[in-house]
Image (cartoon, rainbow, N blue to C red; front, side, top):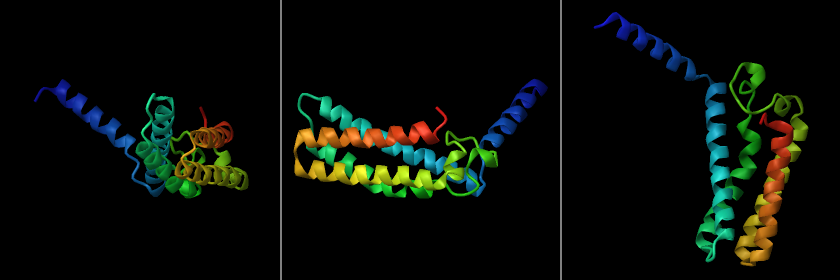
Length: 150
């Protein structure tokens, strides 16, 4: 084998190995990211349906159910050892842990908005759904502004 190729392979393995944090904190960061991706996808699905000429209520219902399922769990996605203060690469600010009561209040706001969204979807009134989606978005923005780096 060519020494240059071997050096590239070794460097690649080293770099890729560094990206795989198998510690409990690293696993929590990955799981948290995946869960927030799910929430974002569900919000985009609802938003897309509300902008469509012929919205599909089943799609909106499934997405609202997903948001209502995940929102109460947000508080559990930030265990000790999974923050930037622990050397983890995350978009979460250290304030999630240092201002945990405030973070809990923000997460509870999202949970309440998600419950209201699900109820609005079940009620079938498009205007109420739009208002509820706005409230979920505001709860997301509130948390992002205070507790997310970007």
